[in-house]
Image (cartoon, one colour):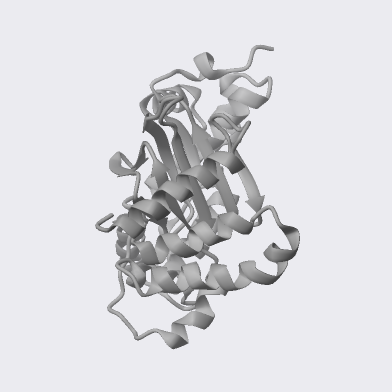
Length: 293
């Protein structure tokens, strides 16, 4: 952290998250809209999920997030910025009852970021789905103040909007400000890629034509393909495949469907191809993840 004040803030953040996450072992608890905390007391196996635009600050422990096979590791005193809706695989690498993995996540809403852009100087654009940085005292301080008052409804109503604005300001003026700025630009590249991602998520079982997505994003196919890969580390086809696999796993674990039925629901015409792809994604066959009838 670099100074005593930063260490003290991190210690307090750890205490506050632990208190607010009491009874939520291994699970997240939403404190207010756009703010949630988690506490994990033992290393867990890899879990697939969808990250939304957010800043996630680790107060204790170590986590690894995989995006298309690329590992992002972040630990106590660091934060992860997620700029887009991204299918990832996450795993707590270091956690124990004495030193649990504790984390707070705060949504990054373009609507909240946009008004602040007028107050910050323009920067060369930065694109990337995930980035890791050290949490400075300037970032930690408003986050700690937010968690101090989170269980006092009147304080939340009056004070939280200003504190959220301060957190966004610290991010915009910090090391990852260029990326956070892109999240708030209504006509920026990330906004156009986000629109394409929303289409893929809504229509993941349908055939995907890059030319159609490029038109939706207002780009030529070659420009769209290049920007999509720069932002997500995946091609649109690879992105769709990961969304399909995550949806298939949810269906297999929550509904009494056969692997063949799930394969058709998520857009595969060949159950054998679906099974091979599923095993490559999760190291398990669909049958091993299927809920018994």
